[in-house]
Image (tube, rainbow, N blue to C red):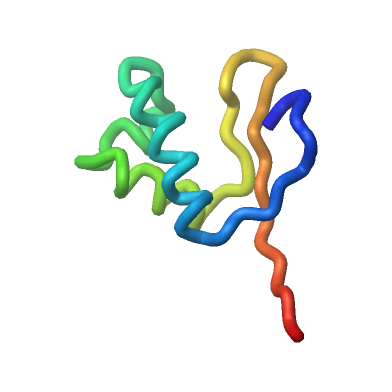
Length: 70
């Protein structure tokens, strides 16, 4: 998140975070996300096809997958 320290989230935590963000922006989504039927589907689409989401002009949330092994 802009201005925040880097966080490591599980896939489920990222899904929930994106659902919260998208739920607050349903009236101002990019067309590809707006056409999806649910906030859950929108978040899954972002996770599977993107690595960032513009929160407002000049502020973008970014994420990337990492693999941790013991």
